[in-house]
Amino acid sequence: MSNLIHIVYISISHRDLSEKELSDFLLDIRAKNKKLDITGLLLYNEGSFIQVIEGEKEAIQTLFKLVKNDKRHTNIIELLTEPIAERSFPDWSMGFKVINSKDLEKIPGFSGLMNEELDSKALPGIAKQVVKLLNSFRQYT
Ligand SMILES: Cc1cc2nc3c(=O)[nH]c(=O)nc-3n(C[C@H](O)[C@H](O)[C@H](O)COP(=O)(O)O)c2cc1C
Image (cartoon, rainbow, N blue to C red; front, side):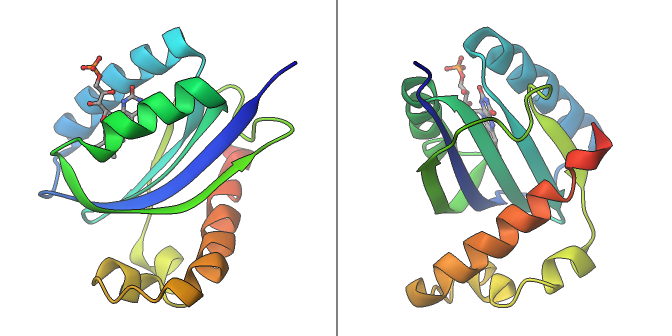
């Protein structure tokens, strides 16, 4: 029986990352994810991260603890943790896209989140929109 979950979170990079830094970082996390059968997608926009990680519950919970303690980013907001019937990004050990601000502006409340104006009542709505945004990149597989 599979025990798949996904976690969606947003965070802020502790500083703007160059293309080289991002690609080195991705090489590293993809190699780790392959070993642990973790898949997902990471979006980056001018210092903001949005990530979905998916896989076996234990592997994902362990990874998310590491990610939350990672000094390379802050303001980590967990938007969603839930069981899933199947993976959305089965072929991506970690897909990656630099997105533009317009994509984020389409999500009501998102900029507030990033500016620490956390309104917990707005979170489920924002989570839904973020999942929609992540899924809109599935076609690029
Ligand atoms: C935005 C962000 C996303 C990350 N995503 C992953 C990931 O998908 N998989 C992974 O293994 N590490 C990821 N990391 C790195 C982890 O936080 C952590 O550094 C790494 O898992 C530690 O691995 P190690 O204990 O083998 O050195 C991410 C870090 C950041 C800042």
